[in-house]
Image 1 (cartoon, rainbow, N blue to C red):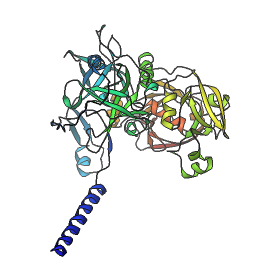
Image 2: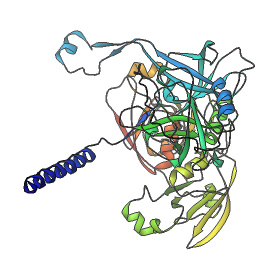
Image 3: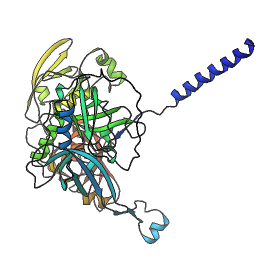
Image 4: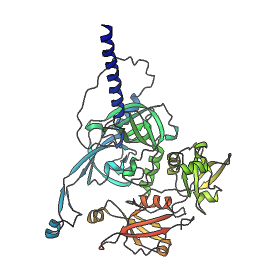
Length: 494
C-alpha cells in the first residue's frame, strides 16, 4: 500500500513545482502607462478579508481630503472628427484617383486637474490635453465650464489651463516636495474610471524615479517622479498628490501596470518642478530652462567603459563628463571627472535627482554646488544660464534664438497640413554657427537631430545641450524629400 502512495505523492509534488515555475516564468512584466481615461472601465467590488486594521496608525486624512476634493476638477478633452490624407502615394488607387482620405472620428478622453489660484488657473498633465479641440472642466459642486490652454511643457508633462470669470475658487497651496520622506502618508485625489472625485491613501515608496514615459511626448524628457502606492487609475492623470496637511506635493501622472489599471505603483511630478513650470508658463508663456553648462552621467546610464574609466560605481554623485567653456560650471571651477553630490544642500546621486534640482531654477540664478574631486569635497557657486549662455528671458511668442538663428514651433494647422507630429521652423538663419556650417535656408523645418524627433522648442533646446556632433534632418515646404545637415559645436556651444 505504501509503495503505491509514494509515487502519487511524488507526482503531485513535481506537478505543483512545475506549475509555480511556469507561472513565474511567463508572468507579464509591468508596463508604464499614462493615467488618463480613454474609455469606460467595468467596476468590480473588492472583497473584505477580515484583517484587523486597528493598528494601522494615528494619521487623520479627513481635513486634507475634504479640502483637496474641492480644488481638484474633472477634465474632459474632446478632439473633433477630421479628415486626413494618406501618405502612401505609390499604390495604384492613389495614382489613378489621387491620395486616399481617411476619416478619424471624434474622440473624448478624461483626466483630472488641480486649481492653483482663486482666479481659475489649473494644472494638469500635457498628455491629458494634447491635441484637444475643446476642454470642459467640472468642479466638485458640479459646476461645469469651458477651459483654455495657456501653455504646455511636454518635457515635464505639465499643462496650464485657465477658466475665465472666476475670482473665489477653492485652490490648493504648494508644499515643498524636497521635504517629502520615504514612508510618509500621502493622498491621491482625482476622477478615476469615470467616477466622481475619489481619494485614496498610501505611502511614498521612492523618490527620484525616471521611468521614461515622458519620452512618448518629448525625447528630452525631465523625470524625477515621486513613487507611491496610493491607488491611481485611468482618469487620475493631472490630479493631486497631497500630504496630510492638505498641501500639494505632486501631480499624479503615470502608473506601472501590465494591464493599464492600478497594480501597486503610481508616479507624481514633484511640486517644486510643477510650481516653477506653472509660474513660467503663466508669466512668459514658455519655460525658462536653466543650464550649468555640463554633460554628465550616473551609474544607471553610464557605459561599462565609463564606469571603469571614472570609477563611477565606487563614488557617490553624478559624474561630470564635459564642461563647456565660459559656462557657469566652467567659471565656477568645475572640471571633467568631478562628481556633483549636492545642489543647494540637496543630495543628488542620480541624473533624475540632478535634473529635478536644476529644473526649478531660472537663467541668472546662483546655486551652491557641492562636488568631489579625487576624494576631496568642495563647494562652489554656479551662475545658471539659458541655452545661449546668457540670462536673457526666452520669449513666449513662439520664437527662440539659437545658434545665431531665429526659430519657431510649427502651428497646429501646419502640422496637420504636412502630416507631421511636430517640428521647428527656421524663420531666419542669421549669421551664427548654423549659417556658417550648413546650407540651411529660411523656412527649413527641423524634424529631428541624430535620428531623435524634435517636436517642440523645448525638444530643440534639450538636444542642443545634449549633443556636440549633430545630424539635423528635416524638409522644406513645397519641396519633396528629406534634407540632412551636419553641425559640430565647440565647448562654447558655438
